[in-house]
Image (tube, rainbow, N blue to C red; front, side, top):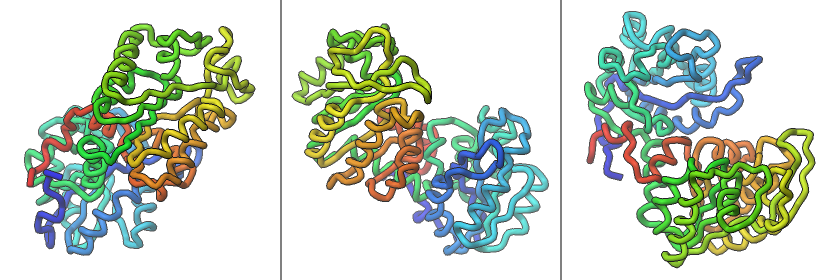
Length: 395
């Protein structure tokens, strides 16, 4: 961990601007928060600042208002939920910059918490506009970035502000960087990576960056179709990325050269169409009908992947094994999540939909680390730098 953290700066009596990721899912009808895990993830940093008598100014985006005010995307419900979780009052303001925000900040006392209005009500946020960043920075003495989920975006609140204030990481950012770095620099072996999701193209950078580190690569989900096709199997109507077949061959060859193992589905569940009404049929990888779609891994594959993962001392998982949103096609994913939760190993779960599945199954506490950043965690594991991390002060 080469970046300074909130522990490394004096915060007592200081105004501290904290970029959090409170982009929580909302019920479209009631506007209620359906999953508060992102708010919970920021609590250690907020509590630390309150306990150390800082004046805490939180800022976040919510949804995609595209630079205009959207009433349903105001931060008030988030502030109310945070207040319940931290058992302290959390005040709000109807803008994130300008006279009203400055007045609200001026009224803060040591240990108070203020949540600014949705950053993305301003188009300048995503444009990383310098004057908008300065207006945010004007509110505080110190900047703390605890929003790993937005660290891959060069926005005003993630990159711009750091030019005008001393900038350090919060505890969630620190935890994310430590956990994800550990599997790139010093994983305990055997190290297995379980990858799924729709497309090979989404995972190319990740696969290429971890190929020399893993002992085994297990591939399921829609992306398995491209690998199965390369191995000479018919995959029915399933998506095959024609322009990625040469790359898939190259990956298979590199795995072999590295002395690692690559496992593809031995059997799959297929269906006539991808809908709630569809009925699945288990077939071997050699018996996939030309008029059906692959929608999940089959029972033999669940057992094969489970046997391999049980040998691992480190396991990383990103991407569902099938069309998880449809209950009858979520069995493969669920079975492997339950297995990962029981492993006596370091288990790191990639963010985005992968993290949401673990959260929905209420197994987050049984994993070593569940990332809060989808795009950010993938980019980091591809070996790319994150703009929101690069601007923070080094130790």
